[in-house]
Length: 110
Ligand code: AMP
Ligand code: ZN
Image (cartoon, rainbow, N blue to C red; front, top):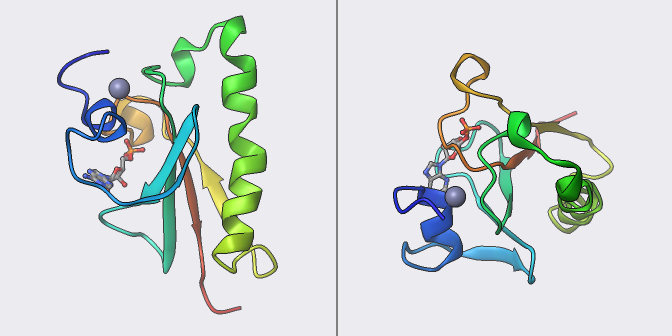
């Protein structure tokens, strides 16, 4: 684990955060600068820099983010209205925290 990785520090509870969900593999917390009424970050506990760094072994880890997203969307009342799922990849793709995470964004009035 890179010591300067903010999300590793959050996962390890070295930095204060409120988890909306936690299991052995993932944590979910609110984005500190929400881009929409509901903006959650779904974060594997295991440190992977970005989508570019995925290995075949990581398939189930990343795949598991999608059913978790559906569950979180339902719990936060945006499953029916709809939401976006987004991976930013590297600086040009808007990635600022280099620990893989999935954005769940929604809650606009429709
Ligand atoms: P990305 O640009 O895809 O790397 O997304 C990183 C996200 O993390 C941004 O939307 C930030 O607002 C968010 N963020 C940064 N620091 C924190 C924090 N301490 N707690 C929650 N979200 C954070
Ligand atoms: Zn990390």
